[in-house]
Amino acid sequence: MARVELRNPANETGEWFVDTRCIDCGTCREIAPELFGEEDGLSVVRRQPDSHEDVGAWLAAQACPTTSIGTVSRRSRPGRLYPREIEAGSGVFDLGYCSPDSFGASAWVVVRPEGNVLVDSPRFTEALAGPIAELGGLRHVVFTHRDDVADGRRWAERFGARSWIHLHDRPAARWASDLLGDEQELQPGFLAIPVPGHTKGSVVFLLDGRWLFTGDSLAWSHERQDLTAFRGACWYSWSEQSDSLARLAERHRFAAVLPGHGGRHIGEPGDLHDRLVRLVARMRS
Ligand code: SF4
Ligand SMILES: [Fe+2]
Image (cartoon, rainbow, N blue to C red; front, side):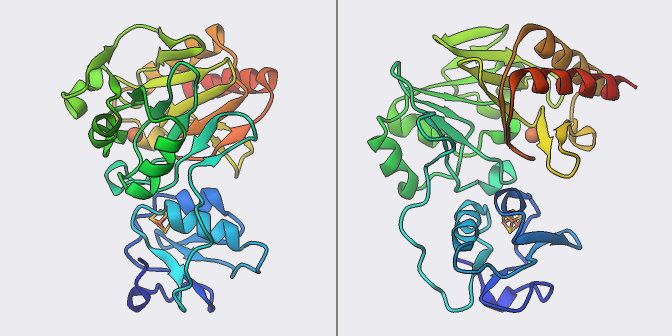
């Protein structure tokens, strides 16, 4: 629960606030950029929501890894907000409840006839485990890279799921049941594609040639309205990341980017392909 005694004085005056335990993961600013902003390395409420925008504030509050977002009057939230299907009928759900252990990375569940897949790990909470059970549980838990393992083991054990991490990021999850190596189809229409760079064992997952779960290898910049990659948070090799994203552009098409950190975007495959090619050129220049 957000702590009003730690309310950041830079918040706009009013009911909603962010406390100073914020770790600046950026998730609230991604979910409700019209309400939250950054001030001296911490998120704050830039504008108090009106009653129609309340849901954005609640979604951010429920996703915040440090539970730093709340209301002065301690209002109770309006029912269950997550899992939240990101497009009606897609079977792709944002899970909220980000974990501080993954620096607030987003995690996703994909509902599939062959068994549901958890992509990266939210914090383990019964508030999510119950709804995930109602969606049919989990057959696989897959990790885009070592940074986003968080509570993955608990999720896998809870649902008796297989767990997958790339062999080069294995030290983060030695308990994982399966290792990823080369490109591999885990289920019909669900591809694991290695993209070494951000970490040596980074992987993106492509669902039905449309949804690309990118971890920290690729994201959307709302500021520039374009695809981006994080040079300042590249832990292994920027040149390898450029090469692996170039291979991704050569071999695959996608229409949506769903990252761990950074902006999400649903667009058009041809446009995103062209943007990825141009991003690679910028990365190499
Ligand atoms: S989601 Fe929470 S931790 Fe992350 S930037 Fe917002 S307030 Fe800070
Ligand atoms: Fe990362």
